[in-house]
Length: 339
Image (cartoon, rainbow, N blue to C red; front, side):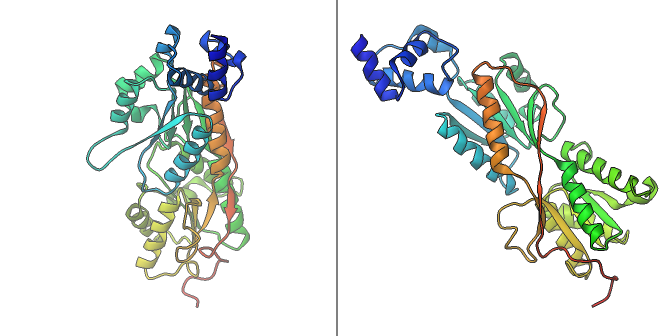
């Protein structure tokens, strides 16, 4: 048997001692390592220990609301790569046009021996009430990345939405803009709420009354048309710059400015949020707040694996500072109509 254990250890790329600990169900062996040992047993025709039958497998659900917003695929790709490096298998779960929802995928994952779930831009609420309860009851390891609502009972990895707005407003006021709009998502969308709070704090500190700043806040669905329609309302308030809650909304804002017969950035400056792929190539190249996708993905996978290993993990929000990337969609303020 000792010779066989040596073969298993060599095939799995671990020590014989690690193989013994894995077979004995030791909590010191990481799930991906244990899975490699169990697969090696299969290769050599050796029986798996009975205790392994109920263990969680290496499947990890990666749940995103859709793939149209470029930042979601960016996060999914970054997280999937990091899961693969740890011997875990990502399973992409996204809402489809033919009616397959996140809840459908969660139900399928629950029928498997899943190791955990990473929600990107969504949360327990998107899993459906029954599936969400099952996830909690089974204590499935979960990490939320930029969740759309408040989830105090989960590990959360988020961009610092408030600081991003403050950076944008600081830059725009420094180049002469005084009437600046904020274009964010629907009421109750948690990142939008944080952006609105920072917007209010910035102007309150400068003595601007709530009655004067609130008409400069617009809400829209996260889409080009949603951004364009709400931009029309902001333009009627006389804004010369708009800070947006996503790159998609920012591109919609540019469309709305052009529909009004105005120019970006000559008449209206526009700032996005995410720094999605190709924002450097749009017309004009988009000034935007860049999310540190790689570092956030590292933190998300680390938090998930710690939970899978049974380590205590604080149920708190870890925020990551964004970086304002200046491009061609912003400029110094000019009197409206000047050329």
